[in-house]
Amino acid sequence: MNDTRTENGRHLFVVSAPSGAGKSTLTQTVVSRHPDIRLSISCTTRPRRGDERHGREYFFLNQEEFSRMIERGEFLEWAQVHGHYYGTSRAHVEDLMKQGFKVLFDIDVQGAASLKKQYREATLIFIAPPSRAELERRLRERKTDDPAEIKKRLRNALGEIYQAKTYDHVIVNDDLAAAVAQLEAVLLGRRLAKEDNEAILARLLSEFRDDSAGA
Ligand code: ADP
Ligand code: 5GP
Image (cartoon, rainbow, N blue to C red; front, top):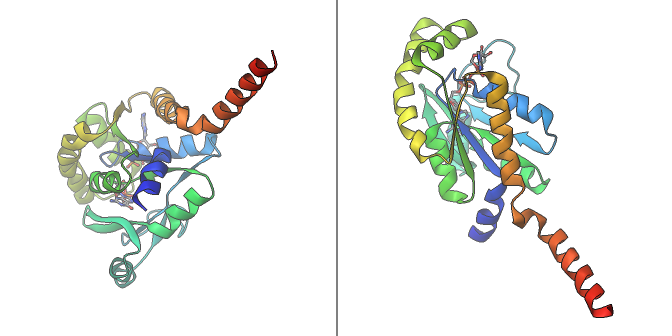
């Protein structure tokens, strides 16, 4: 099992950031432009915001349902973030991988570390805000969290930014279009890995060998 996981991990991309840095905006933009990349939909016990829908942004579960999934070992990873539970369903991700999709995970720093242990070839990308003031402004402007929740998220940002050094890439989301281009460059670079083109290289070699044998 480990070998397959190491192999498949090349197609897994984890994006983490302090809340409000813009990772949902970035990941949704990239996924809408690349049909071969899918966003992993997590399970959570946090209440829905705005027009969030079950099965679109998250699978919204109650505490009992979430605990049952933990007991059954149905999560690839799970963590408590900002006082709520979040987890990645193993079956959901394996299904996406079986269908041949590259999978993008919008998960926190604990989830990223846990996934990297299981999939050593996964690429970890950290999204940083340009400044503390701008992060606070974005959280306020988003109008999805009350002042106490915003305070908590800003406090948690320190620990998250500490972990940036364990990531493979850091993208500063200042100008949105530039950050999208950088995220696409990381994803595209990984997708040009020679292992992904093994079949084509093998065919080329055999064509050239046949040609030189006939010459
Ligand atoms: P996260 O998913 O990291 O919590 P969001 O994607 O919800 O963050 O972004 C937080 C807020 O900041 C949203 O209102 C979004 O429209 C805005 N935002 C995202 N990126 C930028 C950017 N580069 N410049 C200005 N505002 C941004
Ligand atoms: P939000 O409540 O703003 O949607 O997400 C809060 C935090 O939980 C974000 O940092 C997000 O990346 C993280 N998160 C979302 N899903 C998961 C998950 O399945 N596992 C982990 N570990 N973190 C998650």
